[in-house]
Length: 273
Image (tube, rainbow, N blue to C red; front, side, top):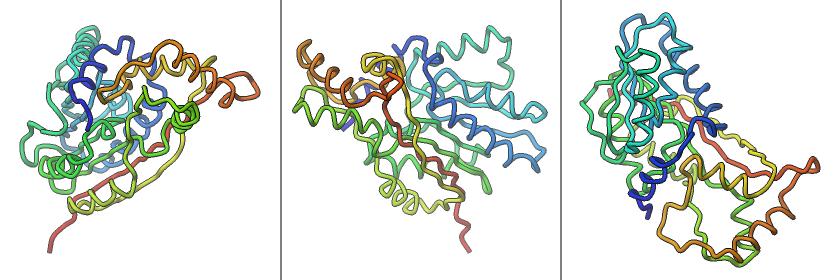
């Protein structure tokens, strides 16, 4: 079970978050283009909800791609540190007329029925407790207007496989990694929520750095620390893990690497006869 308070604290303390969002930026561009295409033939003012909004990068991506469209942006996150940074960004750009921030938990959405034309979540679904994902999807569906869409990007099983193998090979149980959901499990929850998959894609993103410790620091900068209660490894164990990683997961150009496996899904409500 995920320690939600620990996740909340990790992300709230993720300083310089925007400087380390590599694969997040890739999927955010995909989301923004999907939303733009969805609204191309719809000329009314739109309500868009960003679940797990972080520092509101989603707002500025939409602002760039939908420059001629009117929309209201609602960003929801439970990490107050990230929301404070989002508010600072809005004020610095004097850009708050159509942007609203909500402090709330994705597992218990404080939202009105049929409020939004689009609901999206970029790299947040995998931080939910898996037993609550079905409820999350049902809440999104209830908050979605008829003919609206839900766009999700998230990490799935197979993410950080190099680190997983490294821990197994060093017989180290002092680090327990986050368990990323299986795509089959998510698809079952989507069917249970009576949502239709309009588009689905999985792909891999490879992150590189000068050393294993730099890779781990990037994960920490994104708030992606352990999400369960487990003791911190001692210096000797950590050194052994890093040495094994450095030996087995390094390209010929000298850079070490880790793999993120990403799912990208667009959903619609199933129309009942």
